[in-house]
Image 1 (cartoon, rainbow, N blue to C red):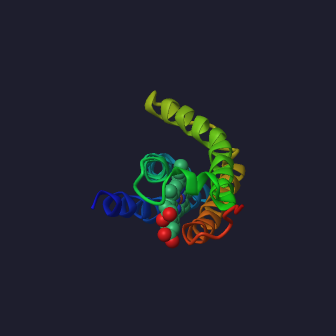
Image 2 (tube, protein in one colour):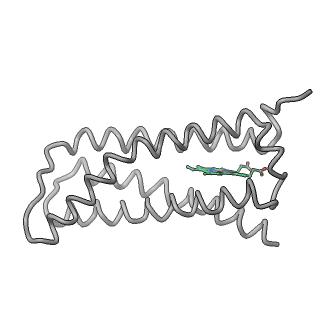
Image 3 (tube, rainbow, N blue to C red):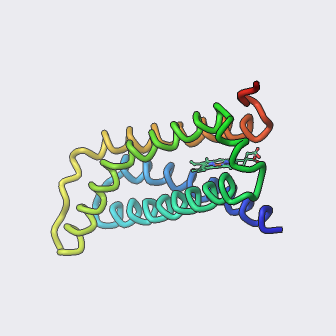
Length: 151
Ligand code: HEM
């Protein structure tokens, strides 16, 4: 039963994360006045929740003995592909994450942040979204035993 619940939470992270990163991009493309920034931060919060849920449930599924066991995943080239894609997302996320933390602080102190790099941040968000979609395909093939090293 636990494996089903953790699996559902892992998939739910996708249902939450994909729209969040899309809406974050939309907010970055729109007008970044106080309301626009609040929309951006709301989407960014949800994106953060999805990331935490992915990591917690993913690690649990891979190494907590809930699914096919650690040995299966370590022997799967598609598991490593999935992890490489996830790492790429984390690396790409560094700049937006630090920027939005700074913007939140500036806005909270009553000033207006310089949002002139919003277009580039939008591009980063968009690439992250594409990588998430790629991860879903890799995950589905991985779960069905494709890419297993044999012998
Ligand atoms: C953006 C992040 C992620 C996405 C979009 C994602 C997506 C998915 C999807 C769609 C499945 C279901 C595959 C299927 O049964 O057809 C899955 C399964 C799984 N994922 Fe993730 N995942 C993410 C992050 C992670 C992380 C960080 C880990 C581990 C550290 C992980 C480990 C697993 C494991 C172990 C399974 C179970 C595979 C099986 O049934 O044998 N995932 N993932």
